[in-house]
Length: 66
Image (cartoon, rainbow, N blue to C red; front, side, top):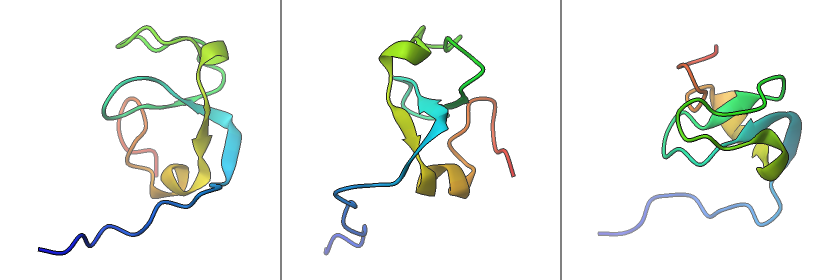
């Protein structure tokens, strides 16, 4: 079977208003939240979120945001 997943963008657009924690799902947090309640990750130690994942709206901590 062929991999139908699109290739990863080598330089994705990032959005500093959101950040990714270490959770496997629902890992996008708004920047005003400084710590993930689930995994304990801290905003200052984690990367900004990818804009395309923010736009999809399904990876947010607490559920869908759209």
